[in-house]
Amino acid sequence: MPLFTYKVKDAHGKIIEDTMQAASREDVAATLKSEGYQLLTVKSLETNIGSLFAGRISLSEKASFCRFMGIMLRSGLPIPEAAEIIREESTNKKMRKILLDVASQTRKGKSFSSVLGQYKNDFDPIFLTMIKAGEQSGTLEQTFDYLTKQLVASYDLSQKVKGSLMYPAVIVIAMVGVGLLMMVFVLPRISAVFLKMDIKIPAATKLILNIGQFMGTHVPLVLGSVGLIGFLIVLFLYIQTTRRIIFNLFARLPMASKVIKQIDLARFSRTIATLLKSGVPIMETLNVAADSLREAQIRKKAKGFSLDIAKGESLSEVMVKNRHLFPMIMIQTVKAGEKTGTLEEVLQEVAEFYEREVEYSLKRFTALLEPILMLVVGVAVGVMVVMMISPIYSIVGSLQSAIQR
Image (cartoon, rainbow, N blue to C red; front, side, top):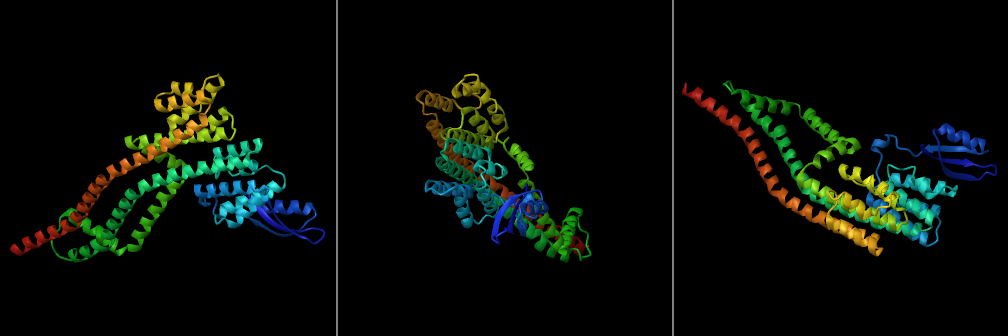
């Protein structure tokens, strides 16, 4: 339900400010009046443009939130006061809204995990499960430390992936930009000169010149169309369903599938290690870890691991049955961790190993991509040059034929 902030005056004239979840402003007003308060103001904290364009909370912001919450709880501050202090320092509007709700509802007796559970689009199942386990075991401060490490590791991994894709993205955008500039500002000037000449022009050349003339006379329309197309591409990438389709297509590429599998193995190992350290039962841990995977085949298989564990099998035995999904080195390492009682530490090391492998794979991918992009850029430049020069050659040839006649 939407969250509202209100200001009321009680029977003694004291001004009270707080928040309330309700279906509408009218419900808030009715509830407060029934409690004997004089209503002053009611404001909605929801965004006006809907949840699609609502701000997101980044991994770095979540890591900072967990770090400071852990520090404040260890210092003896209660959750409402800690949330208020962090809210004052936060610059993210959505995070400020959530922290205001946390401070308000925990003062009224609600648990921290139940309040955050109302924001499942902002906090994933791993985060919520660990917070709930920390509350139940009385180790919430330690849970925040584990979450901080988990989020920092995830942030570092995502930055490595984005950094490796930055170079090809810049090259592609530059190619599109140069092509657009030539089509909008260079070709129209050539078209304006040659289309006025009373000579026979080949059909292909005339088509190119007419396109250039159209673009030159309708620059706002062309630029607006390009901007609209760019906006739709960004929108499609923003929508979860479209992103999943693109991801599944991208995952079919040989090099990409290897990197994605390594990322999933690192995430799976780190998630299990972190949840086990937080005191989450193994069956619930495996269910949550399965949801963290991106590759559909591994995720589908991993969802059944908890059923095998319930039958008395160990994690390494379950992984052996699915050896086509897990490397033998990972299976043997997990088996050794189970025998020595150090499964959490072993899985942590496995996660770090595969995160390093992801970094190496991305470096190799970038090194391979650079010459391919150079070749593509060369071909694109050649095509644009031919598009610009071929009309000139055609027209010059027509002029020579006319002069000879």
